[in-house]
Image: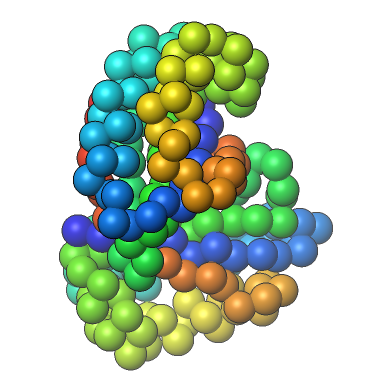
Length: 99
Length: 99
């Protein structure tokens, strides 16, 4: 299991509409093959910065299977208009769960 | 509850020693006031990049109470020698837990 982190910058004046668009897109992640969890986080120090956190079975489940699915296209249709720059996407693995 | 994210860059050749230093420092977080969870993550695309993820009762619990405690000094003694640049620290709040 790996975690996709998509760092997303929006116009904070449009935050409510962006969050609604993410909520509308959530079912497309929920039904995606290999997708186990999804949440949206917002940075305390800068309200323009969000992070979409998605748990996938593997990097391939995200970057190959999902990216080539209609669900990804719908996600980008809904959320893409809010992006002020291309999202910066990384995949993280747990090195140690200390407590 | 907020999440501290400390983005840490190290020399990947020293990864095992860095992870051991973080494990040695973990009890200082576990006993810190307002600290609820701690894990270490590593970016898949770049083995030099780690992320320390710590759950705190509030930003103040991290930035005031912990930063002024002996536990923080000990953390920096243990992990600081591995940092190739100052960690970039942000605090994140959950906007929505979709599933």
